[in-house]
Length: 411
Image (cartoon, rainbow, N blue to C red; front, side):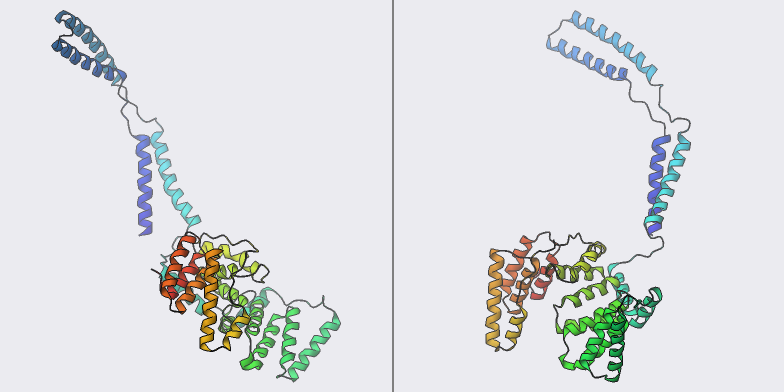
């Protein structure tokens, strides 16, 4: 269907050019033709003047004779000019054929260079399905590491102090003899990472995670994911994705895990999700956050792929403010009533600050979502309407829309 429509359009354009070039065009009406019309109008005017009595019969006859003489002269001139027609130059046909060929060949040539001939239509649902399939079928951690080592040989240790290398070798021996030594594995993971031996580093860090059991922290998982991604040459494998998910389960706001989650989506064809994650993380992070530079290097390309006109916020912009980790820990020890009172106070303070000082979209989204959790849908809907006026064209308003949907007030 596409090629048929494209071919018809090219032919229509080529035919239009050809007709304009080669057809015989009648000359524009000569000036004498216009003079004839004027003289005829003058004759009618003489008759009207005679009827009104403004001229005498003799004077009217004299004027008619003069106008008639002019009509004869103009008619003679017009007869000579009507034989003059403008025809196409002798080479016009050749030029028209060449122009038609150029239009058709140029159109298809440009599409072959800029487009994707033979590529099937990709509706949004099909593209999402393909991305999900690519995500499910992507290479494993072991395959990615082997491929990375094949392309990039293991690092040379010549630049390191031989005494340091000997200590690391001793540490490896000790850890292998003491498989349940948590601190030993933790230290070994750090040293292997310092040497650039990321494959061995993540293996040691995996043992750190395993030995801690229920006491494992989100930071332990993100360290493991970081080493796995580095060992795979920057690729987020399915195994690394599972580790990232565990980190987010323990700490949904963990910046490293959120960055790698966005990277995974970017690598599997979901630039829209990658952009959404990175935009929110960038807007709510301090300027010295370790993920700032990696995100800034990639987010504009992700936005372009997602079809979004986006300009990253300036570095150093105030991050989104919210409850601190100490507030969260304190809330865990409170009774339900005290916890509710604390949340109400924080929500009230956030609402007052946004009303007086304003704030980034993430803070408006937080307030809408908080009102939704508290069951105060009228306040959530009012904030949602106000946010639409404050951020009419801001792409970061997407986080506000998500919050309004979560709160059940988006229309």
